[in-house]
Image (cartoon, rainbow, N blue to C red; front, side, top):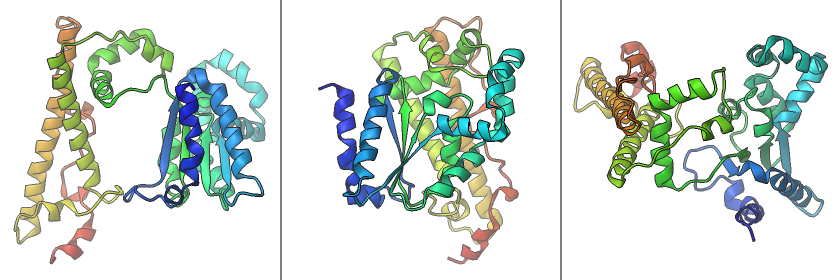
Length: 326
């Protein structure tokens, strides 16, 4: 049996389990899942989703699957607006960039979320499909970012055509490489438009690196991910938020100003480390590709990811004042 068939056959048992339906084992996270597969297995995946729907949506089943095909949804939206027949001509005359911009109002993430919210009642599991067909006109991550406001109880499975499935160590080194100036320059040559496809990424030449260099890259990437995650979790928008940063870095301070200065110094240190990590990754891969005469590793503050939060009193939610006496 092929790997993809083995993985598909495990889905039914997984989604029927009470723990899955109750989002158990996810901490405070919303039950959003990604099922990645090789695009060459697209038809096989479609057939299996149809099988899952027939099985769980039958009279004998107590569960119900609801599928939202993002591609079919955008076609329906275009029909409603009366412009579906004009799309091909519009792209030919105005170009893909113009078309993508023109579709922002018709098929915005908010419009998708509203359509899904109107139909999801009574469903136990939601499948999001058609991701590859609708990209890049619609970015699936933008929909997920908005969807958690209306689907905080129902598990959501996004069926996503990924090029390859990698081991963690390979993913870390690849993340490091893809976030360097070198890749940015490659893509300017390979895909000099407003977007790029999976095929464009596959064209980027990936050179082997010695084991000790790979370990160095993996360490930098892990540190960067940890720092960025800590930065995100420090504020209420994160599901893993536990304690306001002023309280976390209070260190016995008796007044707010002292706590703010302590946190401010910590935040600046974290940002400096993130910037140093990005520059070190640039330096490593510039050396590997022998591009010392063409590129420099330095990164401007405004280009550091994640963008540094403005370290000011306005950054902090006044709600922490109620906890200051704790």
